[in-house]
Structure formats: C-alpha cells, structure tokens
Amino acid sequence: MFITFEGIEGTGKSTQIAKLAERLGQAGRAVTLTREPGGSRIGVELRKILLHMDNQDLCPQAELFLYLADRAQHVAQVVRPALARGEVVLSDRFAWSTVAYQGYGRGLDPELLHRFNETAVDGTWPDLNILLDLDPETGLKRAMHRNQAENKNREEGRFEAEALAFHQRVRQGFLSLAARHSDRFQVVDASRDPEEVFAQVWSTVEPRLSPRSG
Ligand SMILES: Nc1ncnc2c1ncn2[C@@H]1O[C@H](COP(=O)(O)OP(=O)(O)OP(=O)(O)O)[C@@H](O)[C@H]1O
Ligand SMILES: [Mg+2]
Image (cartoon, rainbow, N blue to C red; front, side):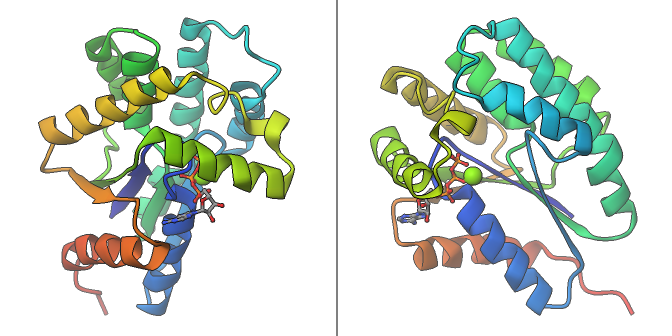
C-alpha cells in the first residue's frame, strides 16, 4: 500500500507521517518512510536546490523539471522496490504537490503537469492521499516557529517566503484536486491538536489495510 501526505507548509505532514509510521510498526507492518523532494540519494541534492532560500531566481519551468527528476528517481529507486517487498510506503509529499504548487501556485497548466507526472511515476500512483488542510496563516506560523527552533530558515525556506496569496492558491488547488479525485483523497482538518488529527488519519488508514499475510 502506498500512502502520501499532502498539504501546504506547516500543516503537520511530517508530524503525522511519523505517528503513522510508528502505529503501523506497532501493528507489525513493514514500513518505508520517505519524502519528496529528497527521497533518494540524488534527490537529496535536488532538494537543496529546490528549497534553498538563496535560489529565488529558479524559474517555474526549471523548478518543475527538478521536481519531476526527483520524483522519477524516487519512484524507481525507493518507492517501487519497497512496494515490491510488500511494505507500506509512506511519502511526505508526492505527485499532487506538483499540480498544486507548480500548477495552481505558479500558473503552469495543471493538465500538462498531470501528464508529466504520469511519466515520472510510471504507473506507481498512491492508493491514498491524505490532504492535511489548514489556513496558510496558521501553517506558515507553525513552520516559522519550527524553523527558528531548528535553525533552518535559509536551507529550506524558499516556499515559506512566498506571498500569502500563493499559499492560498495552493491550498485551494489541493482542495479541488481532492474533490475531483475523491476516491483517492481524504481531507483531514489539520487545525486540531496533533492527537486529534492523528485519530482522523488512523481512522482513514486502518480500514484500508490489507489483512496481514502469513
Ligand atoms: N496539529 C498541530 N497543532 C499545532 N502544532 C502542530 C500541529 N502539527 C504539527 N505542529 C507543529 O507545527 C510545526 C510544523 O509541523 P510539521 O513540520 O509536521 O509540518 P509540515 O507539514 O511537515 O511542514 P513543511 O511543509 O514545512 O514540511 C512543527 O513545529 C510541529 O511540531
Ligand atoms: Mg515537513
């Protein structure tokens, strides 16, 4: 099973995915926890370019192709082999982030992006996308406090530095994608405290787990 977490900055994706990995481990499942960008060795290099605050001059098309390169490498080297081993794969962001950010956020054609994604994932689409939904003001505030605590403002702050209107477009983009592909999306209210959010996440995931073999 392949599950992704999507949503704008600071919605709690990394927090919730860690909780889910732990719970699945307790349930005896083998889990691969990964992320985009940066899920593969080469992707780690691409992540530095994509998120570094100093790269404000990265043009939208170059940004797009770097994300797609990261994804193609991630799927081929990490996601598909883990699924083949029978593991549950959890990815912190995946293909829908491209449609939301580069499409709804940057203004590139979402249909075209969907076709590029098809090339990048090469048939490996997630079974479930959990969209953590939150207003951008709250999300950015959470992310800012976290960055200050972890001292990583410049390393990974490029998107957080975007205007509020950008994040609002991305949020609305995610919500329309979730409505259009409702069989593959679950929208979760991310404004509650982390335990309440996780209760919703688990109630979505648990019934979809296949019975354990052996
Ligand atoms: N439900 C919550 N309520 C309040 N604070 C939260 C909640 N979930 C996470 N946080 C805190 O908000 C900050 C951002 O959370 P987290 O890093 O999990 O978000 P993220 O979606 O992974 O962000 P990014 O998109 O920047 O990777 C962290 O400091 C985290 O501890
Ligand atoms: Mg995160």
